[in-house]
Image 1 (tube, rainbow, N blue to C red):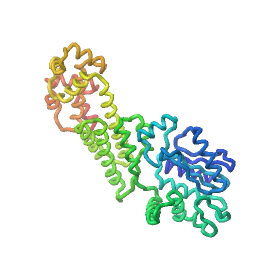
Image 2: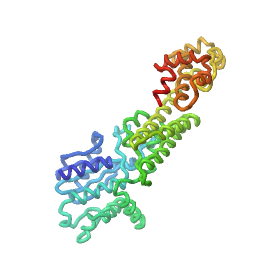
Image 3: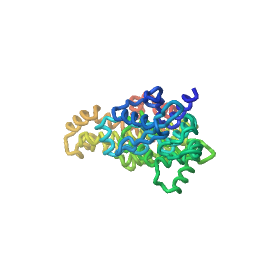
Image 4: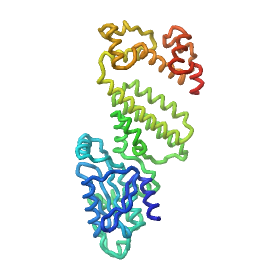
Length: 406
């Protein structure tokens, strides 16, 4: 029971999968956030690690030269513990993605090296067998009385680190040990690779992947302020701003990206709890990715329709005539109407009204303008016509809509 509680806690805190094997290499327990299918190549790695654990206490194996992925093997009290495979760097390069698709390799959980070492050290300290009876510790080369140091607190972490970076300067090892010591409470910061991975999904418009995996891509950060809510609010400002800039790199105009940024920063000021802040940042990231996706899909649609939509959006405050739009396209209004219905699924007049109503909703939410001012601002001609169209589209009157959202 003690082992199960420990391993479940490690997996929940670090997302690092842990598998328990008997001395014959048979799997008896597994602890993981998301189940992965073990391929033939991984099976051979597992066999090799279990074989090496007959004479070694700690084994590190790289998954493949091209992938920043590794597995750990730990010799415990009557059992072997395999940690991983886990990715400790970005997997987003074209070469890596091509290799994973070609070899049909499933995605890996992302775990920082320092967090994986903390988990390994915790297992070694808690579940190791006959700590001081054997003199051999595999790659570490520590024998006799010094073996006790291998299992002791920071000394154990230092030795684990040296197994991975044997040629590092001793000064760097000291820095790593200090960093690990400060992060014993799992308040470590995220890496640049982790940040790049998250914002690349936004830049590429992969909203579906973000929706399914956002909790695993969440960027950890330290608590630097005593006021925890204010701390999370500051981090959220950074996260929303970076998301809007990633969306601009993905294809949104600067105006569109910065408008999204401003809207979500206004929403942030209304958040009353840390949970609401987290949910809002998640929503902003997924929304930015979805807007990039729409932009990319639009590039493969009809050029006349896309030009027409841009003109409509840019002139949404004006009275828009179909004949004038067709003239700008250099085609007949009948042909433009047919193209628009074919590619958008709705008549062009309905699209114009949708754009205007969307603008009206934003004004009702984020401005203090009176309803008659909004109707005039959007060139509806009369308040009664605006109210009739708004209720037809939204199901409520403009006044009721404003009350609902406030």
